[in-house]
Image (cartoon, rainbow, N blue to C red):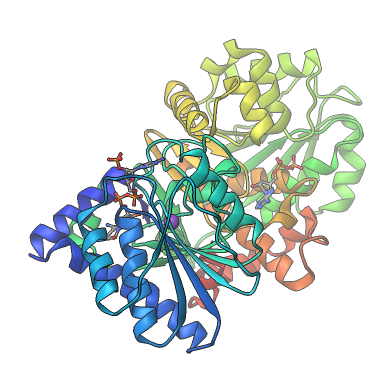
Length: 511
Ligand SMILES: NC(=O)C1=CN([C@@H]2O[C@H](COP(=O)(O)OP(=O)(O)OC[C@H]3O[C@@H](n4cnc5c(N)ncnc54)[C@H](OP(=O)(O)O)[C@@H]3O)[C@@H](O)[C@H]2O)[C@@H](O)CC1
Ligand SMILES: Nc1ncnc2c1ncn2[C@@H]1O[C@H](COP(=O)(O)OP(=O)(O)O)[C@@H](O)[C@H]1O
Ligand SMILES: [K+]
């Protein structure tokens, strides 16, 4: 699903109004009706007090329409206009009048007003600012936002949490609504998925407000949200008359004394994801444990007992997953540097493989074509240097991926895969996966997908989605805390089956 910028949303808005020959207040009525229906379906007339805080732009206009519809259906409401500017939008004013016509008179909150009392039992509708926020809210508006956040009431944000800008991190982190739930119009917003801004969103849902499908289809979005719908077409079915050679030979290179488990996890994940053959290359000390832990995996060893020092491969694998537990010893870095120079097979580079690259940036030019890098935030920072905020991070990361012609997988709660000038935001996964070795499993999985012939970008997108899904299945069976990397690996097969079977799983794809 496409993620639109604020400008693209305004353009779609304008296009819809022109093509469908409707006036802008009709679109606002449609949007607010969807809000109303959502609330009404859940409250069914419950006698709870709903306090609506409405700005003076179109987000506030949505709030005005919603207030009227709630009032007409007998709900107990209090409407506050947050009067932060004289420049009231046309449709706000129109709907303020329509609200007065049904005899609801909002109170106006100005700089000098007392803050209204909010009970923890109230429902707050946050319609102060929408996607039009373009500068810091005034201090008093920020105070009101803090007051709402402190109320412990359920806060339902209209379109976006107020105070959250769409293209940067907030000016003041406490002057943003901490929404309990966001009902967002038509398309997801990038801020929902970034660590600095996603924290304000909690849960979100999209409402189809009827923006014209023609413009939705033809708008070229930089970022896409990846759900089951996007994954299914990428799937490459196993062929009846195939053999293990059909599905590629993967090489997993990594490990050091005390960190052989990382290779075990990655190679097991690689096999379980469907790689035809898997060979690992580890320091001598890893031989016994690997041979006994995973009988399906072939083991080659370095001449060094504890660290990788010289990588000699007796065959050319289809893909190499490298870096997990490998350490950053000088001899290891040198061996990795030589491998990069000699090897043409695409690589999936993770963990200390990335740390070695960050310390030796000259090696970057030797990364084979079609390779994939999978940094967590700290490894990414070592590669890119510091960034100002999440948006700056994405710009720097995109430039890096373009410059080195790699697929860059930025791991996190919503892993983002960057390639060329496009980004793909993953929707699966859960905090249970913040556990040792889950990244090693991911590297193995992506390696296994490349081995089977998935294009590198597709291998990364599919692998990340499947990894998160396997983690979600684990969490649904035993809770977040007990999720372990090896268990994620066990659920890869179930993950495939959920992707392929009809979607009772669609719920996992919500915020
Ligand atoms: N297609 C859709 O999705 C539809 C969207 N709709 C709704 O419209 C919403 C967007 O509405 P909007 O453009 O009027 O902007 P909104 O966020 O209400 O802000 C109001 C104005 O405030 C100003 N301003 C900015 N920052 C400020 C600050 N810190 N302190 C003070 N003032 C500040 C700035 O104006 P400026 O002063 O810069 O001229 C800005 O324009 C959207 O989120 C959705 O709810 C639906 O109605 C229908 C279809
Ligand atoms: N809070 C979270 N929500 C969803 N996924 C997460 C979360 N925390 C971590 N993950 C996922 O778990 C993996 C952790 O990778 P990494 O940090 O490299 O772990 P390790 O080095 O222990 O293997 C990544 O794929 C990341 O996306
Ligand atoms: K809002």
